[in-house]
Amino acid sequence: MSKPFTEPLEMESSLHLLAWAAGRLAESGVYKPRLNAELLLSHCTGRSRVDIYAYPERPIPREAREGFAAAVERRAAGEPLQYITGSKGFRHLDLQVDRRVLIPRPETELLAQRALEAAAAMEGRPVVVDVGTGSGCVAISVAVECRSAAVFATDISADALEVARANAARQGVEERIAFRRGDLLEALEGELRGLLDVVVSNPPYIREDEFPGLPPEVRDHEPYIALVAGPTGMEVQLRLMRQALSWLSPRGVLLIEGGADQVEKLAALALGMGYGKVCAHEDLNRLPRVLEARRG
View 1 (cartoon, rainbow, N blue to C red):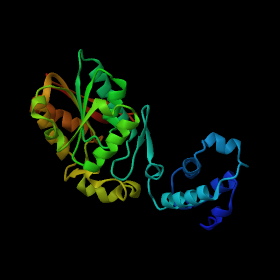
View 2: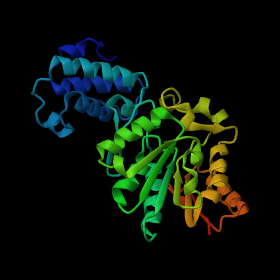
View 3: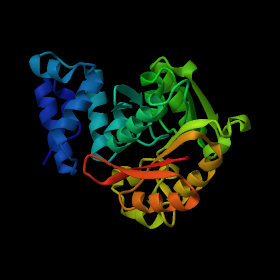
View 4: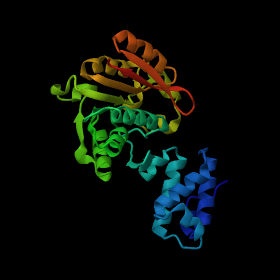
């Protein structure tokens, strides 16, 4: 059994606090409990993990112990670590995340990389649109790493756009991204039709019947609207594919993240819609993860 919840308030040693927290989290079935405990203690004390271990005798103030104990209980109850700490690393970025937005995944780093490569290969000032921007991870990555790009970010959620704007401000690129609220590409001004060089999106792609079986950390905490697309899981992807045909420039490319069982189906459908060149990019597990469909 773990030590009582009130006991860590009397522990000043970081090692004692970590031992208590790791036991509490392991008891609750949290994956990598010791690492979670270290990251939570680092967050609550403002000290690095290296500093915590290098100076274990340094007293932890009672206020920090109270915050740490509360954070451990939240994690033990299944709340994602990233929502407790309020941050998530993505490529070279440290992003603010909370329950208003999906937590960025490693698969979406692949999506961002493909968008950057597509934009960098184009002469002039490529127009890049991140559809369903969420935390802003892809749009901000493009704005930071491809200075020549004109970047737009759309989302149907006003809450998500608030988070994305805050993240862009933290990275110093808020003036380089035009944020627009609306459904997919309909959020953009009509004069951009036919001028988009890169349309990139990590849309909802979970089937409705899959939702109850998702891990509780995801199902009970992350926004439903950012996860579930509909009965097939491909509803949003297909709508965007159809829309993009009339919005892309002649050199334009569409990049969409999808489930491993979806991307090859989407590729075949894209060819039937009239896209000129289509391919699938694999993730680190060698599973098809990103659809690339070129207009011409």
